[in-house]
Length: 238
Length: 238
DNA sequence: CGTAACATTGAGGTCGGTCAACCCGCGTGG
DNA sequence: CCACGCGGGTTGACCGACCTCAATGTTACG
Image (cartoon, rainbow over all chains, first blue to last red; front, side, top):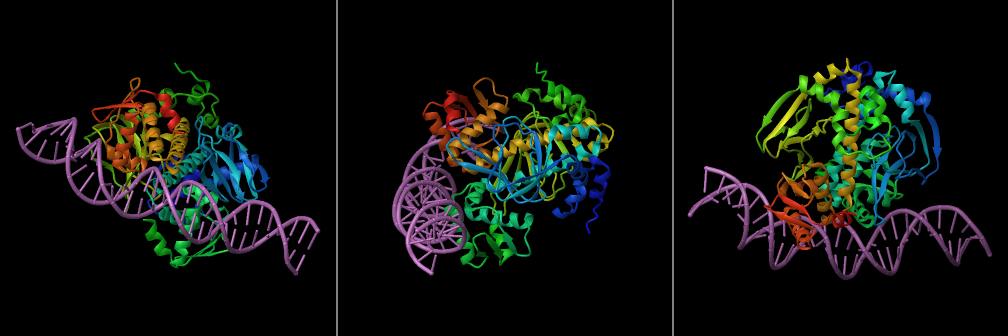
């Protein structure tokens, strides 16, 4: 379906990923680009299961592993000195976390649902990359993409109203998550959303209610969001 | 001066950068790690001069270049549909921007002061990496580090008060910028700071005034900030 | 000296935080 | 079957931090 030249090229030429593809490209063809990393993770990584709401990575420990979510949802976070929690990101099936590499920047990670993951030690990956140049290229691509995503998040957070943040979050989830048509099943609690957007649960709740009452979305069973008017949402997001 | 083992290793072993260095490491030894990239940029990149307040990269154009600031200050930004401007980051001498790689995520860039830069086309870099495996590794390291920095910024922005943001900004600048002792010369205007922190100029101004009036900082000639009590600042930042 | 860009200061309004009460679904146990 | 408790979510009243708008002050530079 998506036989974009740059994508195919990168499967053979690791550094081709520096080229900026001209056309937009949906997430669904990631597999092609990550094939090499994926294969290796499946070969040497270990499949691990975690129950819901357990801490996987502690804030202070060295980030010596790379994680790929197979099923379920994980979030990274940081606890500030006054007790507030800031969520750094949600990781859905197919997402990889642990790519950042700097001292004292390790975020904690915890499961939101039951989770199945592939875990690989970075030292193992290091050994692999010395014999497989393509792999470094793939890691670079993944990291650059994660960087772009976080930069977008900065824009979302820094000068946007509560409504814009919530709408932005919903649209992001519907793009990334297992959204069947116009229905999104949110795996995370209101508190998680609030900590992600830098708001309070009350504000998130009120904003969702406002969106529902003006017919833009529908809410059922608390976590199930239906998009009734996507164009309005896009407009509200700015 | 900084002969950290991991640093030296990465000069010969591109993928060693996946290892998480145990000890903290100041920014000043970046040169060692980027040596390879630096050398190549100096060889095949072109030195370019820009006057202050000109746009270098437009929001819609493809990000096909990598920029390294030699002197002066650059910022990346995005203009929202309602006219608000959000600054993505400031880039000081030694900093590299243009590492992110995703479609529709290109930020605009403009000079804040007169700027001297090294510019290299990513396609040229791609050609180089195919013959120099180390380079990809260096790029990965740089990108991972930039990722960590932006993640930190998310934390700064999403749940902090105006005072915490301003203090965080000042401390960041004093760490990164050419700060001589306790004196920081800010190259950017109040408007730039406000757009960076998601505040208004008035709030920035008032916050700085409050910090000055309680003796924590001194302000002279608008842009010159003196740290009179750094420990108080660190405490205020949370 | 004059001007324009930048910055500060002040008054008032608003959005979102805080605190508290309430609701709802669900499992447990009598 | 209902009572109960519990966690998560919603709703309401109030308040304060920050924004808005406007006037004033300061600096840089011709």
